[in-house]
Length: 315
Image (cartoon, rainbow, N blue to C red; front, side):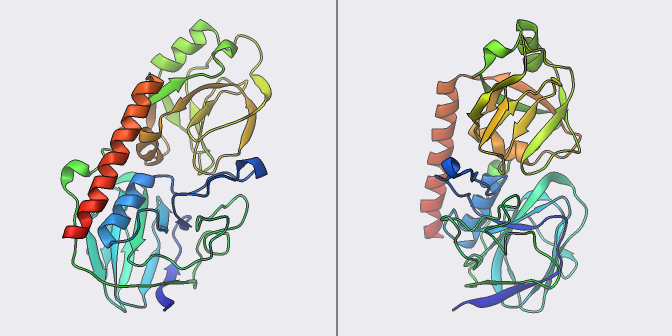
């Protein structure tokens, strides 16, 4: 039965409903969207007993204030925004029962940039193109295609279960500077040798002009061999565009599907979650990695995640 689970008392900075994204619609100009940090979302779902791809709430920098309308198990994963129930601080990476009438709130940002609230039974919003994710640019999906606002009521299929927690070795480390591994290309011919060397040896800062679409970086100029423009081309999550300014842009979850700036590299999939937790001002360095090594890392991460999911049914 569809049941009210939370009323939004304060929405936070930009709290949205996100799952693992909508895929297979790029030809129609619809990007994947979804959680910026899919690792944290999936760990939260594992802890509360959901399918790994179930939708939760993504809250950047300033978390929401939510009034519980039903007893339900929740898990807070990702960035540490000091979560509290009735003003009592609660741990991250652990499932906890919040009871009807209690208030979930957040305080000081201690680590990371985005927190994920996973709710047992998920969030009941319509599927749009096979996903519950909010696509802010397109104004569809999630909760009416927008960020939450005061007075909204979230519905779901709540239940409670025995508390679970993750071993500390599974907690990600959010560092500054953040070393991000990249596959070089595909437009290496658009950059000088010095430009490529600058990209791989210098340090960049995530600017305040960064959002779910992309991270604009500031730092030493990356030199082009001619113009920065290319014939408009498909672009992937993690693609690194370098416009004429020489300042790189990392394309994130809500990126456009095509672009006309040359790309110097692509952030590997397994480094996207920690990159998503980088606050404005975080320093970023790039490290080249081979395609085979990136694929091996991705396979290993999926094997570990699937193993955890299978084991989770036994406790």
